[in-house]
Image (cartoon, rainbow, N blue to C red; front, top):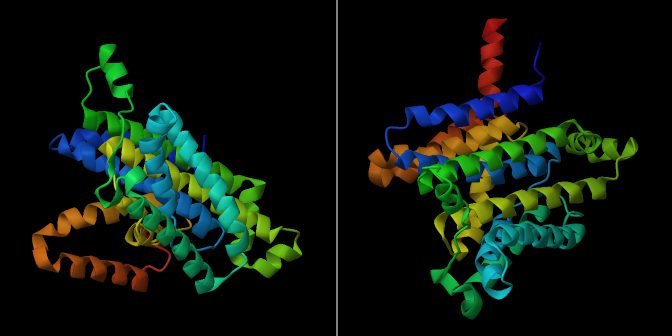
Length: 318
């Protein structure tokens, strides 16, 4: 039986997550793996916004900040369990994305990018300046999720880094599955038509404003969930999570791997998370080398790393 593209993508992703630990030289790599998965969750959201709908956002780290700080503040002020706090953060992010998205998504090109950038900067400033509530630049502690302790009490011997590896991996698989289902749905087809041409999409009956808003809200939820995972994993959150550079990293990861492909974007998140670790051998030249690699990819592999590599392999096979 021939697998569909969606089934193949999910199978490859599950196999990588399941088999990678057999090649880890130490437990530290479980921690690295979990960071890769969390970044990839946010980047899958960027695929929906940028790869499917063709829109750009330079402020999505703001939604990650909302998700992260919800896990820190909701248990203290509302008495919620951290898992429920993460859901609350996703809901708040969705509502804000809807309210903010309605006016700014009428903009195009760099106007849209600047408008979303302003939103991200605003969230970052609030988190940094409201010291009495958020802890200011020093950040704030996040309550323990409690799930690992529950598993240990029931006889499952699992370290903290291992738990977050598998938990984040599961979150990524679910996020990828949802994004792939969206791709094949009527809404996904509308978003892809919008990416090709707004005028053509409007001609065939696509509600362009509604489609843009749907993509923006869904991608904001992904970013919020990623922020919550970061906060719960680190047991600490700072305003850096909502910073401008974090937004740039999200976009870069998506574009580097291939913004039109879920698996490609995950590949980009993996590369950009691991590359700084590899380039530490160059010490003071690390940032230069990282920038050079990204420039070369954009020049010679405009569709992104993974789609370009797959296309070349198929070309040789033919």
